[in-house]
Length: 634
Image: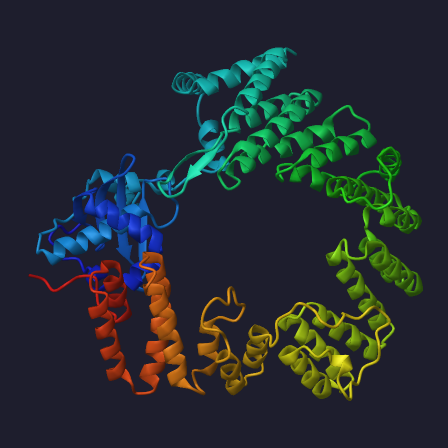
């Protein structure tokens, strides 16, 4: 290693925008706080031009930051965080502050402990490649063990047992299981499962702290039982594990990490289910019970088990069991009890699955016909009738479902209307398809629905007439089919009534349509009619409008983006400043294309004067102008 080599440090040209793209605003904020608190110590420059330092957090971490040949920032740290961390940001800022103050920064020594901790490859360049690979695979371990004598193996196992009590425990368990004594291991695993239920997981991502329950010992114990032929014992423990796991995940606050730990045990239990003494149909029943008890997707392995290949006879017997179970459930036509309907539908869906696997498909539609009035599962029935091309029956059930549900379940009713559209599509009755699309649009106006109307009407060459009347409806509320010259027939279903509570003109949707149809003059027409205050949430934002008119009316686009940025700046929040600079950057780009750079520079200067005390905003404006973080050296 060359000690006197002066490394290149491209860090000095970094802007705040560069840091934000690398780490994000939240991590930058935390990194700056760490740097101001003096958390960075013993900063040095490595041979490859990187920065290496200790950073004090919840404990002391070794952190290294480099810039790749492509100019990208990369970091590695001994902290638990896998991505760019606050410690790395703190190191970069500390480096720039020291350079700004002309503080000399030494070079790293070849034997720096931090390089060893971080695992830099060049530290091990003189070692045998066989032992410097990041991790051994099973073939490596097998080859090494094969080369050892019996005495050496005994010494190795004894040494490992002294260093790790789990190795000793595993050996003891193996010996007891070999002798047919399962009680000790089963009791210990049962106790461990119960104890785990008292320690929910948690994560504080702001401070890189947290706790995730470790189920590896339980998983290994279950595997030991299974390997020695005790599948039934594994199943018994599996029931307790599923119950405890659901309870534990419910108490945990860690974005699913605890659930993943619990779920990692389930493949062992499904394998035990296959090897157990249960009859094939009981195996299916066991798996379904696990799925039905699962509240947090920890039993996905059992859902997969139920989609695997099993004997037809088992599927048939399983279907009969579930049919009996369904018959025993409360059966009252149409209940508002969502939970009851959900549970009943889950069972009937699994019955359908079993009937398909058993080759009893002819029983499926009759089952769906019985269940539709009970759980409002009309969509399931109608979908199967459509696939079977029983279109008349499908239409009859659509009308029955709409009448039965009335206004109680508008979402399902809307979907039933869409099913009639599917029926008319199969019949190639394109005029009624278009009429149904229009009625759906009037019920629930949206850009997506408008596009559906266009596709249907273009097919029968009436889009121009329909479009004009849809726009008139959005402007003043006059229903399309009440306007003169309406080209479509009635759909056969109830039409939306006149006098809906919608506010006309529907400016947001009119703007969205104008943007999609690339009519910037209409975009501005509707935008200028928006009330200045109190309009609430809008689907089409000021940013959308400015982007749509930037070529047609660049000055308006610049003004809209400026106004959006200034409203955010007025919130006096760092997060709002970050959003504001996005709009300023867009406005700057258009101003540059219009040869208005001088006016733009003057605007930014005035913005700086007005908000000079806002240090975070000044940093963001530096990034906007491409100014490096590093100030002029003294």
